[in-house]
Image 1 (cartoon, rainbow, N blue to C red):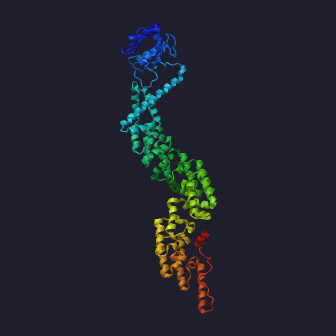
Image 2 (cartoon, rainbow, N blue to C red):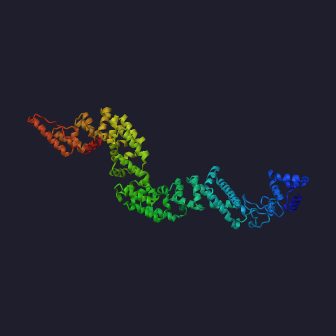
Image 3 (cartoon, rainbow, N blue to C red):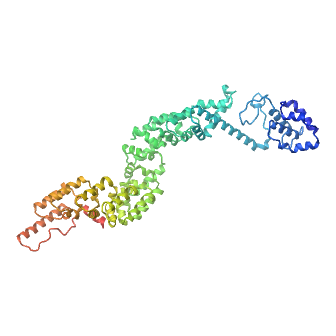
Length: 629
């Protein structure tokens, strides 16, 4: 106990304790310490409450446990503890930022003379944790400095906090490193870290840039990601964005273009970017289209001129001209800059397997470049397999591909399968479905619930088609599914009902000739007027042969009617119109001979004036008869 008191008294002049410290209180007011009380104080030394100067008192107990030249039970050298205690009790200290690793005493000239860590080499892990904690504290300080600069720039607290979260830690670390590096400059040699960090933020003009980007429609996640990708070159963002505006990229697409174009876009000068635009314009992409093209495929701006030329020649080698190439790039900009050469070659080779030549594929891609965005394994092969299952040959698939290539861009399960199942449900046979798809591929591009089903319901409820005939109607005339109900189907139905045809009879006429509802009323009206007034035919003739409206009034109906009148013979509409001119004249001659024989009384067996051989019907009749079978 006496040794402890002597050690304490020995260090008292050096420590220079304040008068109000707990140590002075203990020194002046405690009674003489006995052995038992010393033992009790040693047991309770680790339980001292955190009161004023408690840290200094705790260090005092550590000293109390140490020997003058030895090492205490916690592994601290006596001299190290003395120095630490001296620094902790100093009245005046050099200002340090929060989280400083080394403490600088008043006697130190510079940081190089700071005291070393009080832990030996066995505590490297602890030293690393201390260093990382110091870095984290400086990050937090830099983050608060950035938020303060944003608030001074008239940004709201919420926006500043959200943006700061996107800039952490990339841009915050950049500011922190810059603030540390400029300490070597004479003007910042004696400045605190906070002053240097504020100076770095002001010199970077990041706050005005954020306001400018926000004004141009960029969201704070886009702004944050863009600033982080600039690697500290903040001014390159503004210059590149100004260039994008010069080629008419809309404000809300500027951020998307800058982010998707790649990190090297901020490293390229405007001369390189102008060269890319000039080359595209030279090959058919109009200047007024350039903003739209770059907005949808900013990857073009990251290409070298050599790669851009190779991609352009890939399409010109398939027979495209500048006009086709320009419209193709405008319709689907990704066709030029989004896919790799390997993907592009694989898709062209697969399209050629349908029997298409190199130039045919070129025309197909010029018309529907979205094909280049479809996956062979996930989109095309399952579709081809399904069409083959329906009974469509390779030639039929080639027709679907060339007439409506968009079919090969649709999802099989959610689009095509549902429509085919619907056709089966309404009574269309398997062969009829295959014929429908090959004859009218556009059918697969219509919406099932917005287009196909409403037309079928209209035919069943408003046009008189029975449920037994609806499958036949759709199978023979799938084009009806593409007609507008309000502008085409409903006016036609009202017109036929106005002629005196009842709804059930109209449904039977539609089942016989579904295309009846597709003609314009302006074409139907003069034909009906000629039939009733000039030809003086009854309405039943029209009901029996609704295909009458499919023939030309000037080129077939009127000329053949005049021939019948001149020869004083009469045919049913079917035999009058549904044959070739040669067969029609042969029928007329045969009818004239029979009439002459009847008038002369040579034969009492009068043959019917209607020919029994109807094998000479025209191509239209053969087509619909085949589909009906």
